[in-house]
Length: 88
Image (cartoon, rainbow, N blue to C red; front, side, top):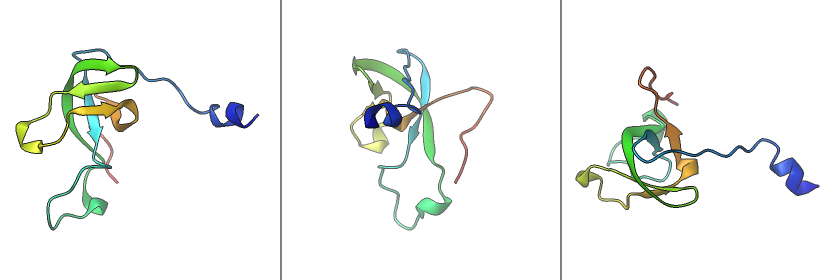
């Protein structure tokens, strides 16, 4: 019963290689002096290069980010050409 209730509002999200997505800044280190409160929730958009596993995507990140480019789907959000991601 608990599993059924927990999964009630979940939905499966899938992206294709070549699509652009926003990356959540939730787990990214912010530069010195910046507050998460006044920063955008997402960065990007970035192109998906590879889907190595189910729900895992490798993005084409700029070299200056210096982080591993592979992320779980819950950290990604679909990019729409006509819209920008919401701010906090």
